Length: 205
Image (cartoon, rainbow, N blue to C red; front, side, top):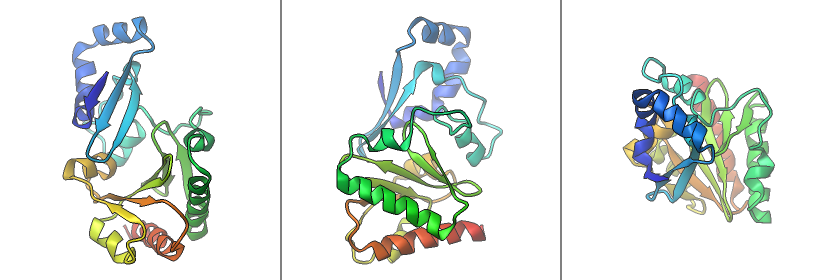
């Protein structure tokens, strides 16, 4: 089943409303999936029908709500490893991901990277970035305002992707967000500056 990305926000309420009937459908058809399609940013998310209902989000701050979402990081071994994300990527993208990961850890060695079905999250006290390796690029979502990112990436070699307000709420809650498409390791000094500024930004928060 494919739905527009905006429908994702109401899935938990729908599942809670139908209660036992929703669970019976999931048990009867364990292969049933719901895909949320974001045509604006050319991405989609895959979820199992049985991912809902989850713990109610209404009384939780955004960071906790994200951590309880169906694609949460857990302490259990996950099939969604780095290799899972890099499997369909070309060698250039694999090199970009490796260098990007090293860059984050060079800025702050205590950062954690957690792989889920849809992204590899960069976590400090909370998630500050989401890495999505794709076939020919690394799609890096950062919790920074677009104008801040463009101030760093002045050469425009790396593509800055604007997010709508609803898209920003999906990734950052009340925090502004946008994305950067990284195709190669050229002009890496700008990515280095961006990562440094991003990590420092949330040390001050």
